[in-house]
Image (cartoon, rainbow, N blue to C red):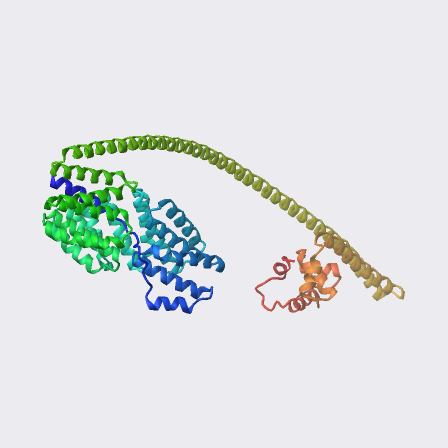
Amino acid sequence: MRKIIFLFLLLCSIDVIAQDADEPLALPDSLAGRLREFRRADFARAEALDAAIMFYQEMDRMQDAKGYIQELSQLSKDLKDNYYIALTDYYLAVYALDLRDYEKAVLHINNALARIEMLRMSDRTTRLATKVYLTQSSCYSGMEILTDSYDAIQKGLEMAGDKNPDLYLKLINNLGNLYHKGGNSLEAERLYRESLKLKKSLPYRNLATIYCEKEDYDSALLFADTALQYSVSFYDSLCVKHFIGVAYLGKNDFDQADKYYKECLNELKHCSDPVLSSVIFQNSAYIALVQGDYDQALTLIDTAIVITGRLPDLNRKLNCIRLKAILLSEMQDLENSLKCMAEYSFARDSMMTQQGQQRFLDYVYHHETREIEQRYEAEKAITKQRQGFILIISALIILFTIMITIILVRNRRQKELLLKQELDLRNREVTSKSISKIQSNEILNDAIKKLTEMEEHAENDLLPDIIRSLKTLVNEDARKDFDLHFVQIHPDFYKKLLSEYPKLTQNELRLCAFIKSNLSIKEIASINGISVESVKTARKRLRKSLNLTGEDVSLLEFLSKY
C-alpha cells in the first residue's frame, strides 16, 4: 500500500510549475538606480525596464514584474520599435505561461515571432528569437502538444548556436523533459547531464526525479542537494526541498522527510502556487499518517482537498480523497471512510464521464480534421492538375513561339538572300554596262587614235579640237553612267566613307567606287581615259589617304565593309 501511495506522491511531484510569491520582491539597488536615472520615455528607459523584468524572470517572480511589463509595452508602442514590441510580447508570453494561461501565451509568442521576422538579424535579435522558441517549447509541453514543443526546441537550437550557450542548455533541458514525458528516461538523463553546464538547479532537480523513479534514492538526494545549492529564488528552493522530501519518502526515512516537509509547510505562506501547495500538504499528510499522528494527517489532507478543489485537474483531488479514505480507515472511522470512497467513486465516474465527452470531442475533432485533410488533398490534386494543364499550355506556347521564331528567321534569311541576289544582279548589270561602255570607249579611242594620226599629217586646224571633244565626251559619259548605276546599288557608300575620311577628294571617292565594284586597273584606266600607270599611282595615294600603310589588306577587302 505504501508503495502505491508513494507512486501517487511522486507523480504529483513531477509536474510542479513555478508560480510567484505573495510578497513582492524588491529590485537590487543597481537596477532600482537605473530606473530612477532613466525616467524619460526613450531607449535608455526601455533597456532599464528590460533589465528589471529579466531580474524577476531569473528569480521566478514574473508576477512582481507585471507593472514593468505594462510600462515597457506602452513605451515600445510610443517608440514604434519592432524589437521592443517583440520583447514585450515575449515577456507577456512568459507572464501568461507563469499563470498557465496557455492560449494567451501562444498568442503573444506568435506576435513576437511575427515582429522578429521584420527585424534585421543581429546577435540581439537572434537571442530574443531563441528565448521566444524556448518559451514556446515550454508552453506546448504544458499543453501536452509534444510534437510542436519538439519543433520549437529544434528551431531554438538552430537559433542559439554557439553564441548563446546558456539558452542552448535550457533548450537541451526542455528537450530532456520531452523525452522524459515520452518514457525515454535514458535519453532524458543524457540531456539533463549535458545541461548541468548551465549551473542551474533545474537540471539537477530533473535528474533527482529520474533517479527517484529508478528507486535510486541516494543518487536522487545527491542531485537534489546540488540543486539546492544552485537555487536562486525562494520558489526554486521550495521545489528542491519538496523533491528531497520525496526522495526520503522513497527510502522510508520518514523522520528526514518530515523535517524537509515541515520546512516546506512553514514556507508555504509565501507561495501562491496551488499545485505545489496541494502536493506538499498531501505528502505531509501521508507522513503524519505513517507516523500515527492521525489528527494532524486529517487536518493536512483536508487542506489539500480544499486546494485541489480549485484546480482543473481532478486527478489531484481524487488522490487526496483516496488518501483521506485510507486515513479514516486507519482511524477506524469506517463510516466516514466509506463516504470518502463513495465520493472518490462519484468523482472518478464524473471524471470518466468528462473524459468520455472529451474522447467524443476528440473523435469529432479528428473526424473533422480528416475531412479537412481530404478536402485539402482533393484541392491539392486539382491544383496539381491545373499546374499540369498550365505546364502543357506553357510548353505549347513556347513551342509555338519557337516555331514562329524559326519561320521569321527563315523568312528574314530568304529576304537577305534575295536582296543579296538582287544586289549581285545589279552589280553584274553595272559591270556589264561598264564593260560595254569600255568597249564603246575603246572603239571611240581607236577612232580618236586614227584621227590623231591624221592630225599629224593633215593641215586642218579644227581636227585637234574634234579629237579633244571626243576624248572628253568618252570619259565623262563613262563616269556619269558608272556613277548613276553605282549610287543606285550603294546609296550610302559615299556618306559612310566620308564620315570616317572627310578629306577624300572627288577623284579618290570615284576610285573607291571603281574598286568596290571589283573593276580591274585596266578597266578603271579605260573608263577614265588615263593610263594604267596613272591608275596605279592613284591607288597608292588612296591607300595613304585611308591610312593603309601595309600591303596585307587589299583595297577591295577594306572597302567591302562600307
